[in-house]
Image (cartoon, rainbow, N blue to C red):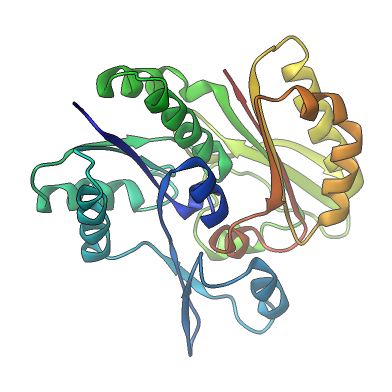
Length: 281
């Protein structure tokens, strides 16, 4: 009988606590300063923000050996199949790394799924996949279901600056520089190719956040089954505003989570981020 594991990377926002709760396997992304190295599980986002003016650290994917070790660790737990869910191949090398590593293990059937998404927009696929495993769906049926849901996972990301996306080379199709004098702020998301693009521009952070809340309310007004997550990057006040405004949607969500974004993602987006993500079931 097949025993299927779900594996993702920490750029999916599946942190250690969620991973334990949901029984999802996670491999962390790495963070390197000039004098020390961390990963998403050994550093807090608050540390990034406190030190980002002094140094913007580099991020990297795990080594091929680390991924192979993770595959073998999962095999030793009794699993014979793995569905790997990666953040967008246009934003990270994780998809290719998962693919390369599977050539170095035996007695494991491994499917690597490109979510074409980022943050919890990727994590939603891991959560759904684990639910389908628990319900007894076959390996092939789960993979087909994930592929059919690509357009149903949407992160709405409010940025205060493009500085850090630009520094990290992950600007994608985001157009227009945030005008400091005009106080223009951007809402971005991932397109169907898995690249960042501009959804809207607003004058001022408060208007940007309210615009994002309105967008999500409109998208979910006739949807009965959905997942919903609120995330912030050193912007707890925005999260509290959204929680109050979206109380009914939060209560009806099939899965709800709130918190601070993963440390690696905080490096690429900088302080002041606020995000709402939804997944239409």
